[in-house]
Image 1: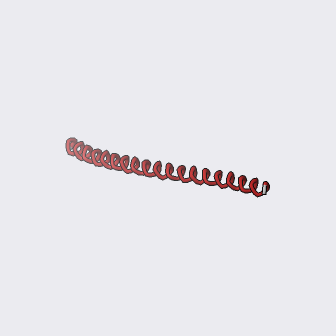
Image 2: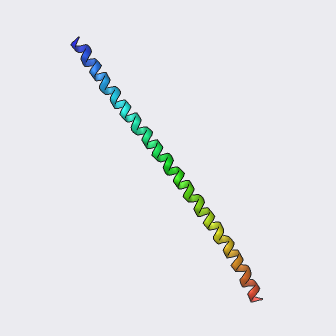
Image 3: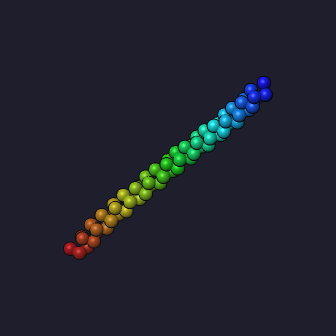
Length: 69
């Protein structure tokens, strides 16, 4: 009976360690997913800013060309 308890205790410890590892893996995946979403939003915002600057540059170029004529 004593060996049975030792085996059971070992199994409980192993199961607990696996559970903790699984939980930390899920947390890491959740953090990575959130970081990816934030990066995607920042990239979209930067893309919009670049497009706005491109339009502004085109307008300025047209005005300069017309002023030089």
